[in-house]
Length: 302
Image 1 (cartoon, rainbow, N blue to C red):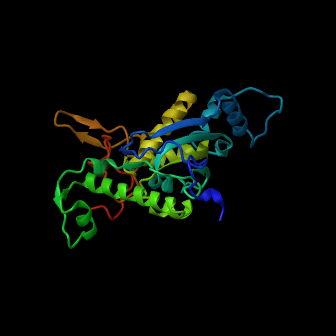
Image 2: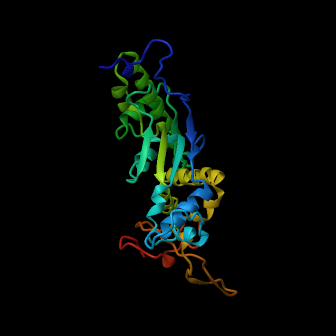
Image 3: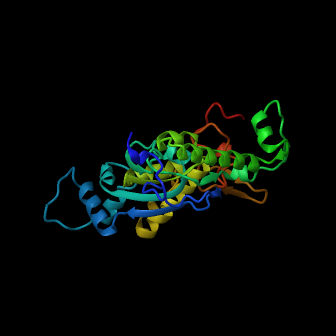
């Protein structure tokens, strides 16, 4: 067993930075920085060349056809978008989120290793739904005997129960590491809420597709938040891309016509969510209506 996977005496070189035992609520301390982005002039030149490749071009021709370059973002033979790369540095993201991020097949990732890094006093992210949950409940000793014992029979809120579980996980992690258990084994007590660090590299076409799908408000809230932060970070570096980074529904037109009582009004877009959940009361877009969806699973009631 390699020494680096054990906790060292004093300040260990594999100590993960920024771990302060914080419980971040919602999206607090969720950070994204764009490390790699496409330069407009060169990228459009490249896309312009690719757009006429099926016909052929003159090697010495350095002219850029702006219209042809912009068409690459709309469809057709747009594989040249794969030649352009974007890279994001993300910190404060939960392990629950990174489990979803790494599902993207045409992407590359470098993530903090809990097998290597010492996450003593790790930070954790409390979902907004738990933070906003109301109610104080008496603990049933028969159904929740360990929770009853830990709370000494007191009533608990959802926030208190969550924080109690995180606190215990931190202490057990520290106990195992202090007693010589390797990091790769001590990490097994870390919850999915544990905050981590990850670098995400996408080709431009894949990122646009990912954003189009995963920035939809119907998905995991932290995923929606990270998509928004990625867009913001990328647009700060490459503002010319903003018009091309859209949720799938924002690319549609011709929604249903609504009767407002004082006249009719046509919704600007269609809802493109592909899941089975109802979109009303979950998505804030005005066009998020069941009768305005392009697809509705047979699982959807009504």
